[in-house]
Image (cartoon, rainbow, N blue to C red; front, side):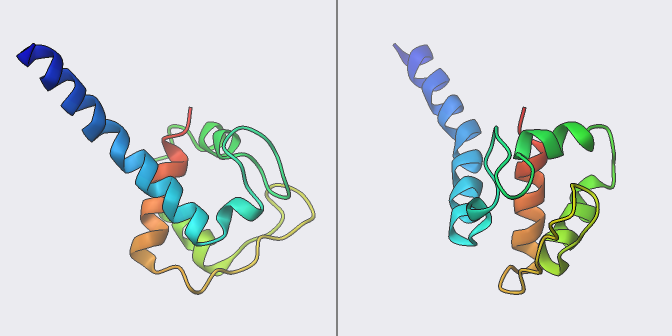
Length: 101
């Protein structure tokens, strides 16, 4: 019984940041253009994670794009700047995106 409770507590601790960062993405309107597993206006988070897998600078680069915007990497539609996202929140969001499988 104790072991089952410990396992459940550990699983909750592991999944809590993913849920929290998805909530952050929703609160910052990221989900208006992106989805976890399909292309909307912008690429899916899984596609972004796959493209930059193994790139040690990906989180910092993506965080900068979240705040400043970007264009030309995923097609003709530019990603607008998102100035209401702080640098710290942008890094959380970028790390969450890179964790998508």
